[in-house]
Length: 411
Ligand code: FES
Ligand SMILES: [Fe+2]
Image 1 (cartoon, rainbow, N blue to C red):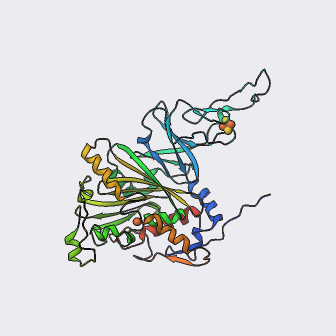
Image 2 (cartoon, rainbow, N blue to C red):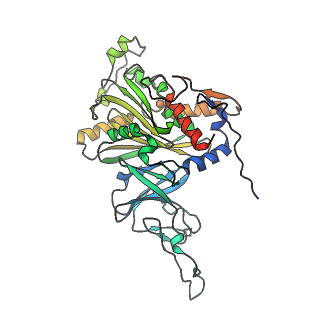
Image 3 (cartoon, helix red, strand yellow):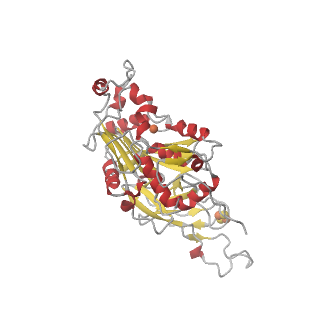
């Protein structure tokens, strides 16, 4: 009988500060993560409800590595099911999106209802009384495999497990309230970018939670005096450690005075040719110009000025990750606000002025740890715990990620 190989990767101690490098490169551990995390008691971001507004609409997406379909049925309910035919395992939906009465597999034309149940089998009764399905074949147990679904502020999440906590308990009340505050009105889907990251999915999840690097790695911030770690802000770590929000408050636009008062080095003479890029309105009334939020293991939600984007982090093997950026606005945006959101969406995404470096920095880590065994990287900034803080020069939310990771993995 085939033996399942289990990973030999171990944390050096019970703490959250020392992270073994093998954790990003071990293929056996990666298989364990797919089953314990992505197919475990986690909520995985799938799509926006606004992408499937009408009866019969569908989009394809992923939960971990597994292709899934999200649909809206005649009653308006959203379903998420595996995009894998119950017959021979072919992809059922080949398109990214569409509208259909039934989902039909191209291989042998089996058809499925919008809730994933099996509808029709070609040549079910054979031909000329010969062949066909045996009488005992039960259509009811041969549909597409369904996942449990929840919708929160227009975000659709799915889970394989019946044990998964309800969404608000899963992220904790503070993170839930921040999501409510960012996605405060019905959403409209504006479009997406997709990029491939040459690194393990956890390295990107750490980057997403790493408030410390923003003003150092992303030179756009300092060049144009936009983001000081000394600005008012903070970090909230959600329930279980896996979710977080990092926020910064500043006057909108260029912060000449703040940089000058603190003597922070910046390229003084550089000016944006089109400063309207940063012409922002304080929509929440809370003065937050930057908010970056995560939900373990696959969601990033961020609001820079008036650009709002939802990032989906998808593992594609131990050393590769796909990152999908979904740009959104609100249904009631006027033309000027729609224009502003689209213009400011240039700040983020694969070639975004303040996010492009994140596309390669994980690859620099992945290259440097190749062949290394038994050594650790460290996240000591701001101590060793995972408590929320008003500091931003801290690695508290990365340690939160590892707390959740260790719990789900039993490590
Ligand atoms: S694999 Fe889908 S109908 Fe045969
Ligand atoms: Fe970054």
